[in-house]
Amino acid sequence: MKKLIGLLLVMGLLLAGCGQRTQTYMVEKGGKRYTVDTGSQTIREGNYIYRYELTRTTDGYSLEITYPNGATYFYSQGKTDGTGGWSENYDAGRFASGTVLREALEESVLTEKGKSSYLGLAVLLAGLGVWCAAAPRSVWYLKGGWKYKDAEPSEAAVWAYRIVGAGLVVIAAVTAL
Image 1 (cartoon, rainbow, N blue to C red):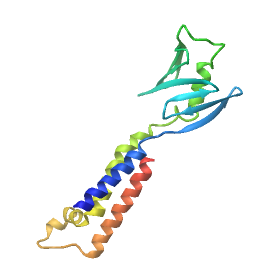
Image 2: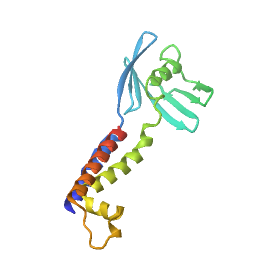
Image 3: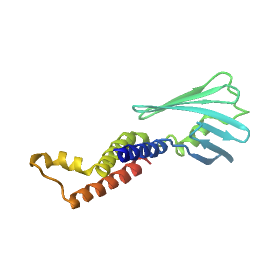
């Protein structure tokens, strides 16, 4: 039982680490370099740091970018079209345009198709895998052993369940990435 608990804790820690999708990448738009940090939700251009907030909707997304001076650019994308605008204190000559910053985000952030939607599947597969690997006799019993009186699984069946369990854990890790 202690081994099972330890194995479950290790898998939980591994999957928790897989859930964070921090990525930094550079984009060049209009002769300027932009560094997008998805972990802190920022875009850096030289000395300027723009913060963004992305909300996914059923048919697209909603984006709000906050400029260093507190001005905002907003954009909503639907299935077929999008609309956007900016606050009154937006300074077009001083900062990058909202359109350029949105295009910089389109390199990765806006085109992701909700990777975290597979996290639930990954947790389920990892749980099944850990159970199969740590307690193969109970899996065998639930699968069909309950039909027979005083029956025990063969060593081959026990090892087969362990191998399947390890495979499920690997698939879960790949799915979570």
